[in-house]
Image 1 (cartoon, rainbow, N blue to C red):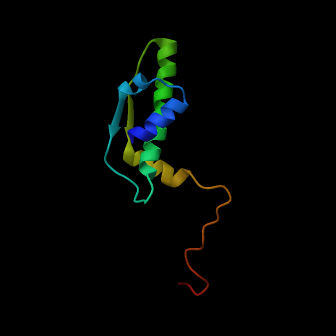
Image 2 (cartoon, rainbow, N blue to C red; image 1 turned 90 degrees about the horizontal axis):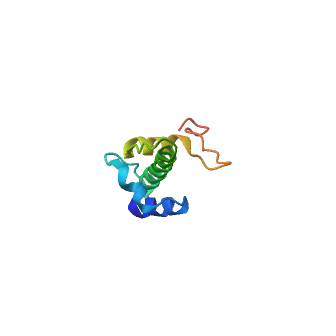
Image 3 (spheres, rainbow, N blue to C red; image 1 turned 30 degrees about the vertical axis):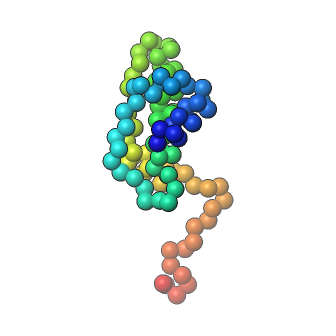
Length: 96
């Protein structure tokens, strides 16, 4: 996941040192050919790191960021849908 996280944090303009307070809980993943769990975890981690940096700049506090891969995966599995996608019916006309 570090390559994905590095890419996202660089795109956000965060320094590499921003990842020092990151703690990943590595249990759980979505079954997928693609790196869905890694993308979910990296995206949520980058958002958390950006918020921690903002908080640090405003208050001087530097909170740790904890990301749970299982919860990240579950969030992506239920909340992200391609625009205009219509899922096929679970059963066909004959009930099968």
